Length: 171
Image (cartoon, rainbow, N blue to C red; front, side):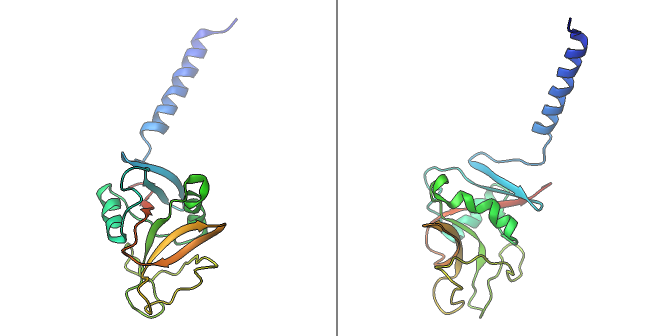
C-alpha cells in the first residue's frame, strides 16, 4: 500500500523545487533570443532565426544585443569559444556570427567594445591565419565554421551576419 500523504508531500516539494529552479533563476532569455550555453560566469545567447537575424552589420549587432539587455559576446577563453562555436556549424545552419573585437587601425591590436581593453585571446582559423591588423579594411571579428575549419575571421564591419550576445550570470 502506498502512503498518499508522503507521496503528496514529495510531489509538492519536487514541484516547489522545479518552480524555484525554473522561475527564480537569474537567467532571463528575452523573446527573440535563444540560449547557447553558460560558462565561466557568462550566459551566451543569439537571435532566433528570422527575418533580419542573419543580416546585421557589426554596428547593428551592438544595438541588437544592447536593446535586449545583452552585449556582443567577448570570447576570452577556449572554454567560452567552445560553448559558442557549435552554433556556427552545419548542424545549426552555418550561422556565421559577429563577436566582440574591432581593429581600430592600431598595429597588432584588436580592441573590445565591452571592456575597453585589447583582446588577449584569439582563435583564428587556419585559413584566416593572423589578420593584417591595421593594414586592410577587415576590422571586425566573425566566428564561423567552413569545411571543418572553425574559428575566427577578420572581416569587413559592413558585412552582414548574425550575432552572439552575452550577459554576466546574475545580471
